[in-house]
Length: 176
Length: 176
Image (cartoon, rainbow over all chains, first blue to last red; front, side):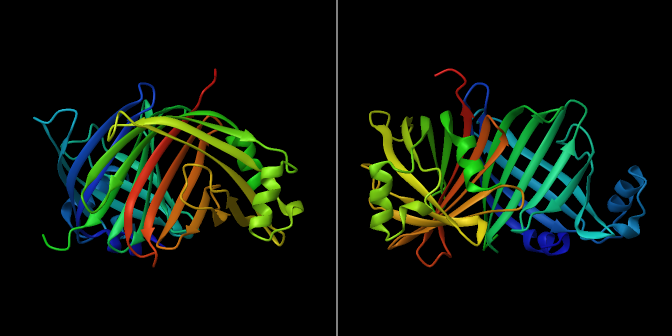
């Protein structure tokens, strides 16, 4: 698996069921959402802006995409869970199974971020992102082309403690 | 990672938060349980019986263990979720990162089963078990020695459709 294959498999509309575990308090959260993953051209002005933000030559970007999500949480049924962001993969020229993933701020994110990704030998995409006071680890894998799973951990900034863990089952919506 | 290291890390009492996703109906289940994983001697009569059941020389068994669990599901709060079983790893003599995992019937399982396990390059334990009319795929990995995660999929017997997916966060209980 490489990032180009991975993004191509991800393009489309997904129905997501997400469970969040707050590990300190043993709380559960349940979220149902719709996720749209849309391919962008590499010369999209927003893609070029994100590359500039990180001082990366836009010609190194491959398969950039936009992700939109909209859903509902059982924690606050009145409030919609929604957001959008643009993600720009920058593969490592020396190792196609690794690279950086740049993300713009979007309107739902608190900050832009550049994560480091790699693929495990079973094809799992693993993304590590460090923030000022936290770190995130995401694992995404396809069981079939129409079913993928995602585990996301939010860690303390030293990477040792895990604050929350979440699990998403994402099924491709065959009709939109 | 090999099975001996993996079982040794697993021994102890764990507080588990499990979320089940029914993929066809988009239902969530929440289970809180306590899991005890207890090392057994390789000459335990129950371990020898399980090996005989599968026509395997008991001298090939390594690090057998008993697993007990007791908890509560939000689907049926009146009923305790509980069970016990004995698991017997049989490493592949030619490849220490692979092998079989034998399981007795226990009183909560519908049948005994022999699964095939291997370790991914990131240390994830992956277990595939085929039943008459279904197949199970489990992935277990440690983020720290005191925190592990488990993703379990129940598939149709052809291995193509996924019926349910579950995610467990398991924290070592530092006092029992």
